[in-house]
Image (cartoon, rainbow, N blue to C red; front, side, top):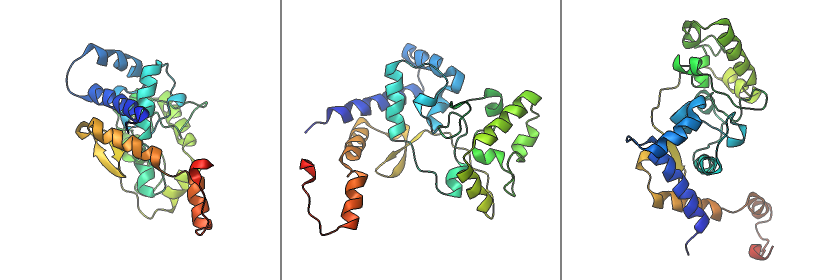
Length: 223
């Protein structure tokens, strides 16, 4: 049976796929204008929450980005996860309850948390941050970003024996069936199946009860 909601969500992600494809279109210009102050296409490399972005977005584009976020967000639990987190527009790195984007720092290569960390794991002492020749204003902003990084992430960095600078990645990626896929290679059918699969995933409460009471039989559809 056709799932209308999954179909709509898949087409919203396809709209973003068209946005990053290499051809000119007036429609692209509209979205590019709205995203201009937060890095443009690079938003699709960020762990964002549209409610935390410091810009106005029309409902259609907000819906597209929310759909994208549903198939691109991953958990941050390991050292590799932390150093590869994009700083900008990150829903966990907030200043006055909003994520932020500082173009001057981004163009100097300060993009991921790993770009802030030295080889011995010290924040704001990396080669990139020391060679950026930042003004006092930008240095102050960078310190503010550092203070906003979750303490849990800093603890993971501190406990690591060695810090490896994250490799650059110019592709836009999403998660399909727990595997990372280049957005440009994704089809509408793949996205539709992924959104439908997510809807069919058992709720966490159901999973917990099954694990705790394996012999208990319940009619979940009636609950």
